[in-house]
Image (tube, rainbow, N blue to C red; front, side, top):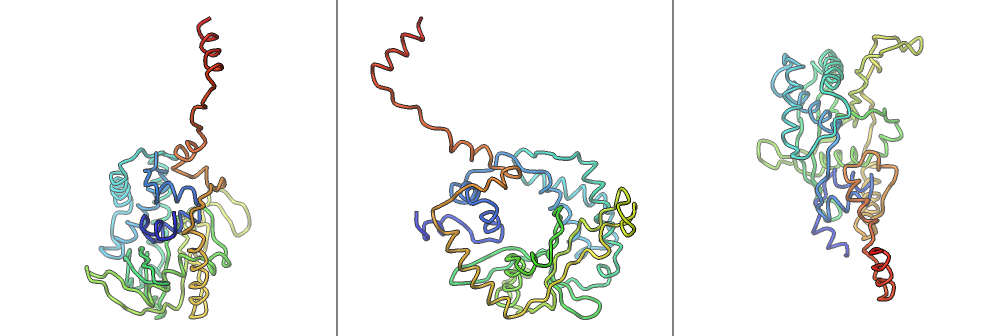
Length: 298
């Protein structure tokens, strides 16, 4: 299987590249062999529901009932999956977590006073002659007039600034905003946007501390004073992104898919992956077959 064979089987989406970076074997099973996952982690549904409620806050009304909107979005996401969901927590605990996060988001003046220009917007952009697609969470005009690209994240682990400076996904969004097209009201449109900031909105920063762990980490406080982690990126960073993306593609589009055991605990393809180790029945010599038969019939 060569590069063109692999390209003919996959879509170059942000999620596809993310899957390869997580585990090349999972990438093969999912995107090349087209094996459906055996299960889906409930944390994925939780993240989808949070995104949808935040999208509705900015596109419908900031006066939504947060609990009802979250439960509706969670039910909607569950109906879309069509595979068994592994519930790591019960729905009440997810609702409690969602209420903390969404109320914290709702309460921040920066979120209420900004102008969200784009929300959950599909993009397409050609890089190195290949078409990449995906969805950008949010682009907003802040009250101070700055333009900001926001990637909403419900991960448990807070990223470092170094991580964000090297985050290929954030860099691809920036590249798409400047050079690609966005699907606006059903029409592919080129806006040539250059945000002042490219940032992660760390949603779990709104979670409430359950105990005091320090003088500035008191029980009842939100985990972060500011859940937005900002970077500033320009043409130099986009040029570096293009070079590094080409190297990533050179590795990704080769037929050498190997498992990453660090990802196994989170993987929905464990059953399919383990089946690779099941050998075919060995071919026994005639004499040995006869001996086995005699032993079995004693």
